[in-house]
Image (cartoon, rainbow, N blue to C red; front, top):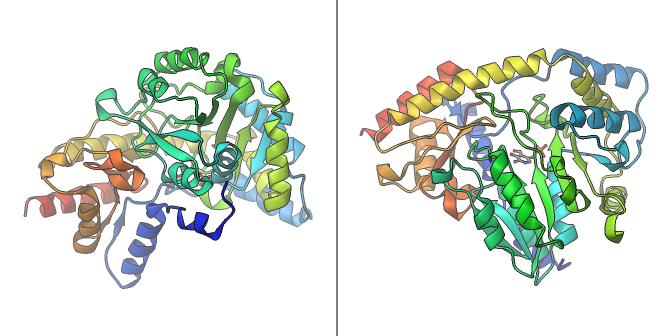
Length: 394
Ligand code: PLP
């Protein structure tokens, strides 16, 4: 990494936050804004989780916790991993961090340096590229194509690996497309990766259980042959509607080939954020071990909205939208409107009060698309579609 102030000039942004600020400011001026911009569930954190945090504060859990996270919280993550993936992980490989992003940060600064290459999905979560550029490494986009159902292609991914490649970033179910990469494709990728034993993998599985139509997301943890170079990012933000709590976890390789990455991220925590506060971790345990009814209810609501949003978008002139299989985003193709995505997104916010994000904010291959987060009521989604239709038919 280049330790210069100039490196900070290479950091990018997450435009969803800028759009949220602008939408909030317009709303405070009395404008009726429908926000389909930000990627966070519009549900409250379930009550039993909130109560666990309040109890922790009342019980006096006010001090530092271990840098890697409370053992009880790491054990809860291990239990949850076994339930969702069928794979046993040791709590001693689980790291609790303040959100999903710090895992991205840690993994990318570990492998990024001038002269190295890091592969990342395009369109994809914007912070991957931003952080890669920060380190001085070369970002190499892996195309995520609509024609492929917004799954990544094993063949194309493998073809982009060079002797300089240090890290491959994967994300399924994906932001911003809602794509879920089929198991067969992931198997082919893992097989191909045998030829590149020096390439580490960071699999962002933060939307792991947020899938529809009985689709099951494949975890990279299910492939023991890459475990010694695999980092799995996950967290509480999306599944339990806990974005503001800043609670994430990740699973790291230990000891293998002299690369104890777990110990490296522990040291980074000690140097950077020390630990995650105890009340949030105790709430995190309650989230994992408690009833999952609220999660199921939220997913049913997202599923209904998904159908409404896709149907609505496909009635718009020049717009087509494939069905997202996971997360809570629709990524319609707007190339038939003859408009550029970012100016269209800006105009829709300014003129008709609908906040959404232009595809190019997720990478160069995002041109021709916009992202709608359907974390809003069915009524508001329908109103937003009506407004977009009225605008496009002008
Ligand atoms: N990874 C992906 C794919 C995301 O979409 C997000 C949030 O939008 C994150 C990670 C970051 O999660 P957190 O808010 O827990 O840092």
